[in-house]
Length: 127
Image 1: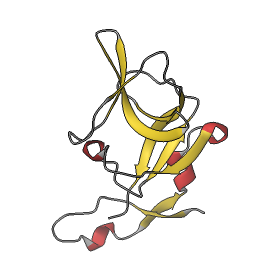
Image 2: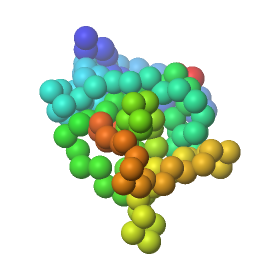
Image 3: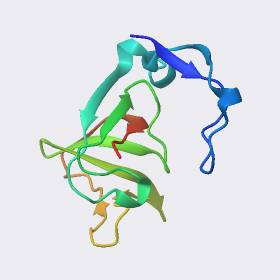
């Protein structure tokens, strides 16, 4: 459902009445979803990705068509359970890195049952 998008920026100080008009309608699907057939949403749980701006109950927009490369945040199934972590490679060793020092990184080894479901493209975060 398209909603109004006001032109101009929101000031952190005093509002400007001159900027108070609608520029166009904005459909969040157009903004957040590049490939609808390859996109799904999932709700975040836990605090291991706080440093990446992912909080408990945030909604993650995930694109299955994007390549999971080092540095990207991915959704993985590890031994049948979903997790969200940053994909990394250090000295040839693949890892799923937490963005919170209170959580351990996960080293990926051959015997681990892991499937990457997709790359996180956006986070919908309530304030």
